[in-house]
Image 1: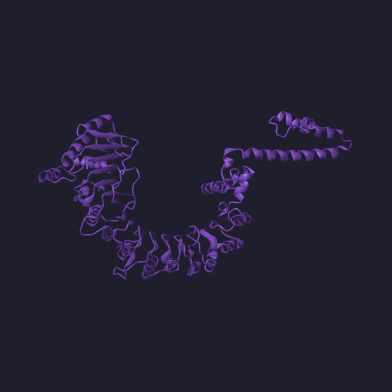
Image 2 (image 1 turned 90 degrees about the vertical axis):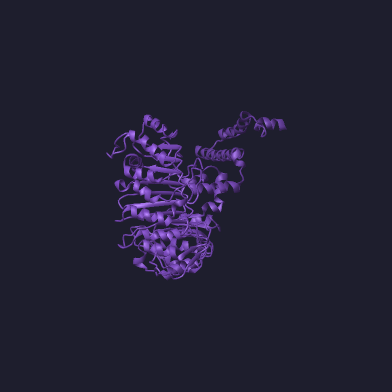
Length: 570
């Protein structure tokens, strides 16, 4: 048979005409099946075989088609990395219609092959899907470092898997009653472990960490997070730690550590940069045991009685010029004679020379609530952007029966606020707070350029400044005293200028606003040039009245004043 005849019979394989190729290929086979003189079952079996072969041909053609798609030009190694990033964003849910990131294995043969051969994609080990799934993930991860997450009670075989793969576990997260597993963690070192997080759910008793955790060998451990567990400080000494976060309010009840053990721990962990301790600090004596020089400390966050906080601050010494970010939050329920004011001198020592002004440029003070607290946040920089920089100081001080004005006096004298440029005040002390408190707190802040008032305090300030303590105002005017002589900008938010608010609290009526600004303008020696108004109950008429005193009045209900607003005019 000639080549032309064969081509006419079977079609040309290189032909681009589908209509010419497949009919000519299929016709001889159909003629053959029709000519068979056998029983129908055999013919059906032959046809079923042909159908299977045709499905395989379709699969091969689909593969050829997919290979021509632009996305198929991505190298397999890069495609695996993309899948790995996806696995960090989408949870694994193989038994649900969404399936999570595992759905990439259902797209095409190449994607599935790439996913199965990329070990990093299977390195997040979980136990909530059953033992077989965990074992399969461990097998597919080959020898890459693991991120192990335990969120429930483990069966013996599952605990055994955790221990068997400790040598390549990089992140270990335990959130469950895993006391038995903890005992097994004392026998094996963890050469590549960088993060260890353990927490006990509130309905269970606190977990007891073993004394010889990881056989005291975790040379690369950097992050240690412990919540609702009890421990001894010597058991946590891993000198490579940079981030420490411990929340253990029942620590003293189960394992009463000594002050010496706590200080020795800090001394033996010289690489600590970020330390957050909540309810786990032993009471330190007022006299110095020994000073701890923490060369790299950038942030200290402490929750506990005032005396414990003072003890910590007085024993720690950061290198001069170090980027120290100190956050202090505490509760004093357990000590009636504890006084939050005692913290301020120790804080001042960390901020700078106690005999000179500290470098604080921005101060935010807020307060109120059932527990009567004052929250003080301070910055050493003024950043003209929408991102508020990390504060140098954050304190939450419980007043108890202490008058607010006493606390403000200690803040003024202890923190040395003479360098302030920006102040934000937002408080719900109601009638306990008045212009007198302003006078006490900011009496030395003669360079203040921008004041941000929020809520009831702003209304009372405007009202009392213009119509309240008239005698005091006249006395100050006669003596040449001015609270904010350099003030350039005032920002006001969440104030009702037009009557009574929804809670029935009396707010200053509209006629008060313009005289109040006029008096502020006089106090500021006519430096006041701008008023920002946001989220206030106010009318255009009142805004126009403001412009009679201050020409630049910005009224924007959508924009809140932020501490990083640029300061105009200086």
